[in-house]
Amino acid sequence: MTSPVDLVLYARPGCHLCEEAREAIQIALEERAAQGLPNPHLVERNIETDDEWHRAYLERIPVVELGDRRLELYVSVAKLRRILSDELDRTVV
Image: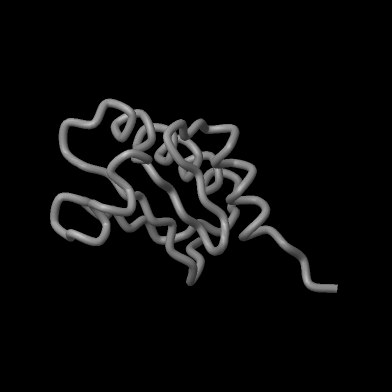
């Protein structure tokens, strides 16, 4: 099940923390899929390909954005679970 929302990862090649963020994202999305919960579409943006992204994120990568939520530098599975749940599992009353 997917969601119309994008989960955006700003990263760059050779970034160890970015690799860890990718792994954490994969784990969190696989857990949600196994539970039948909606998942966002993952979009990865290489900051080396855009001057604006490079200026904005070079000292902060990895940066993960989902809706109005953002994680910077250290992206853990627990933090991802929390923002995914906060953004995607809201029930409308």
